[in-house]
Image 1 (cartoon, rainbow, N blue to C red):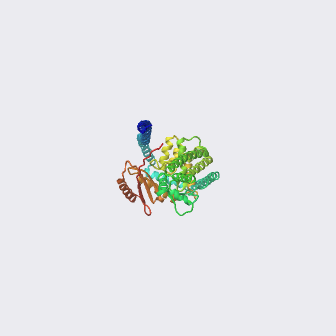
Image 2: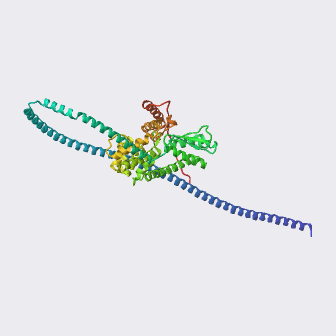
Length: 520
């Protein structure tokens, strides 16, 4: 072929190749754009799906947070409501006691008015009789004077001289013999009765302490008890009112407090925490609450045990609890429950010796110091408190008489009351039974706590460090931070003006606000 034709074919091929390449590129680009569009749609759909899930999750979280806040608010409302109900209950109880006292005073006043009226009538009757007797005597004297020609004084002297001469020596000898005989017989009989009663009952001497020692597995445990920045030991001391003494004593912690119930709760709490190993403020509160409940059950069981041992029959449940609480009360260093049981048995034996009701004597002996179980909660001496409790729970008259007269506050009206008073003296006079110094020490600490509790805004107060320090917990909604300084100064001044004490007393006022949430 000619060269011109080849050139034409070549140009035509080039044109067709370029055209095909252009259309091929267009086709490929279109496919690519289609894939990119599809992927973009998928990305958008996935983004919308993720956004929807995040939206649902955020809504759920907001609902959960609202639920938690609602529960916390409802809990706070319940707690405030319970506090108000508790305050209302205490106020009602106090009003009931005041009403009872008022009624008793009204009845007593009415009784006194009746007795006074009867006495006035009796006095008028006696005055009238006296006048008649005087008239008769005067008439007789006048008649005798007419017969004997003697004055009244002369006749009286003659008669008295004659009678005196006749019987003076005989009467003197007789009186002396009878007095000596009665004295010897009474002394011998009393010795026999008391000896028989004591021989039939024996009881060990109870020694009370003001400190308890808790053994530790190692000295490292002391650091865990103290806690970070002392928060654990502060929590234990604040909740129990017991002072923890952590010194160089190896593998031991000393608990110091004059109140045996607080000290026992603190001891049991510390033993459980040491054995468990988890020593944290929330755990401490939980264990203290548990130990307090267990001790309340033990107090009830001790009361039931004392009632069963003495065999006095049925006793009101509230009195049973009061009897159990005597185990943690001391009198001149003598355990009050052991002393009451001892008096009950001795009084019962004495009653049996002279033919009185032995069970009633035991009942009166066991309950004679029942007021000591509530003398921290009620006003008055333990005798007055005991009479009020026994009257409230309808104890027999002999029991009331024994409670009221065993310290000589009232005159004994029954033989049972005299026997209980004698048994009380015998139990207290036994060598080693009592300690004067401990009782004075306890009274001083009780006076210190009572003095601080009189101030407005004080919730609780604890005398610790053997009375060298008093810690006062105030109500944060009543006393603010600035007022705590004034309160501490006022308490210090009142202690200085009211009490007598050796050394110094440190006054510590604590104001604490707690906020608690529950994560679920």
